Length: 402
Image 1 (cartoon, helix red, strand yellow):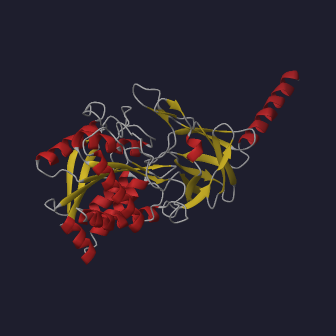
Image 2: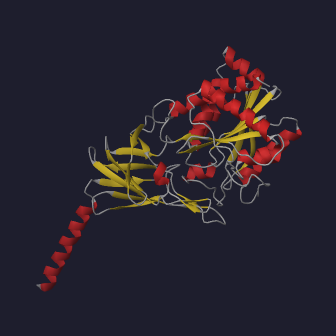
């Protein structure tokens, strides 16, 4: 009898534990698809679901990053789920930090096409949480509107037969995925612009920007034709394609930050993505087609233009040209955030390295992941595509001054 009572008591305790563990009818967090976040989850005593993001690490340094969010909730329609995000204590450039300070919004979608921004709630100790109501049995949750490798493939398929487009393979990623340069326009045009997106996998905004620019230049109206008479554009649309597919946050699969170490030749074993781009650039320079301007596109919580200031000849002239670029961004786009202050040095980034090693006017352009001050609105794919489309006029006027 004692054993029976003990067994009944244990079952009752287990049943109570199970009921407490799933008070909101969470069925599952699905991460089985491209670009989904590596994570694990568990119930909290207060009924929240603790979502533990998994870090990716930088080779040979203490740096780590976990800030990419993209998964699918499965739960009963109408259920309210409180998600608490954990493992936000990143290490950046060897210094402790936390992505919690800039994780102020996420976006949700029931169909993967229409996304709605939702503010997060800050918690003590670098934690954030959000409460969602399930509109149906499934709900996609992401930090930014996702842009996947499959989305890029669809774009390439849509434009590759256009006579204004040339798509050139330049190399492969660590896992063998192709890297391609998209050229829009005539390479013999007087000027050349280069853009790179997605060196950091979570930062999808840059992909929406370059897609907006591509589609604008291919509209073939009089202004688009005038733009392409003045300049052509070369774009590496997805620098860290492995990381995008696998849902990483910052580094490539061999632990390299693709927006670092541009102050020296790339290591083709550790960063084949950068080595491929470097070979392409040096081939362009030998052919007399050095880019006149390069933009490295990123997302963060500030949205500034990072102007590096390495000790190079003609630095003051470079800064004057970048001041003109900033003025034109303010004139033609919704950009208002401004640039980094005098004395700033973003050593090793593409903006810094291309200026120092190759004499190319290059910047790192961040896009605020939480709020667009110039539009008084949350960021969205629609806003970023519009920004990219507006860059056509920015570049046209920028090169008119030379």
